[in-house]
Image 1 (cartoon, rainbow, N blue to C red):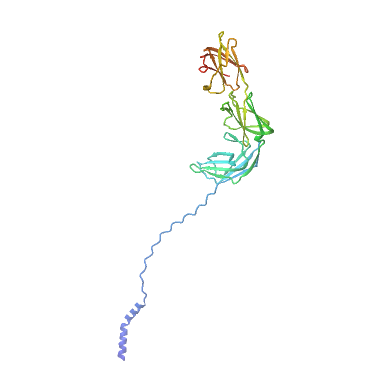
Image 2: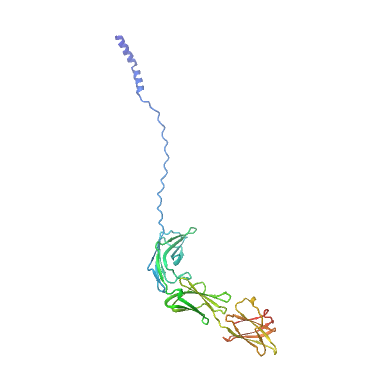
Length: 370
């Protein structure tokens, strides 16, 4: 018994360290191999800046000191056109206008210097002028317009928030002008109204024509319409330019919320003339042709039979030229040099000359301006 215990003791004593190592190896946790370090992520891109707030839109505003305009040289409406937030461009054109149904009331002139914000005043009267032309502002809804035209860019237009109804009081209408007459002596046109007015406006123009429809004289285009303030029930207009004997018709136009035309016939009295020819030999008969030039081209002159036959007993021919005759053309036969005298019996004016004739009026004639 004693030996066995010892044997076991010795066995246990000798193997004890090894047994402990085995136990430790079985109870110690197994170390796993370490994972590789993660790759660092690239830095995030910077955040975009916050969006800019939209630019404020341009604004246009219109105000008037009153809304009724009277046909009177002293009446006026004061209009104020204001704006803000207008884009700035030193090469752009800016135009400020006041319109009524698309027609110009005031303004319309362009500039390159317009601040982003500002205002301008317009004095609006019954008679307005744009550059060298006169016009009448129209009644209705007035509104302001600002036009922006950048160089090489598209045009932009902004209208005023306000549209203001304006009444315009006319003192007469086109239908109130009932008659027109021409005074040949004074070269005037007289218009007659069916009522009397005080401080009223007439805008007029005229053209004259010869009997073939060709224009002879006009009031011109700068200005196209001529203004004239008047009072009463008739208007006398002195026509500009010099009257021409070829004129047979006047077209007289007036402007007043429309156009009215008067076609006036110019009635000219005949021109009494006396033609004397010398020398005339005894027993000789001189054939006299007279053509009254009334603006026909020369190639249309056709002589048929002599106008008169002159002798020593009747060396003078008495004729009445039409009132629109500008000059007469004379032919004489037989061929030779004559002393010709032409006298206007209404004015006493005399013209004379020595003229050589060939005997053929189509081939050779003498022109005398009346």
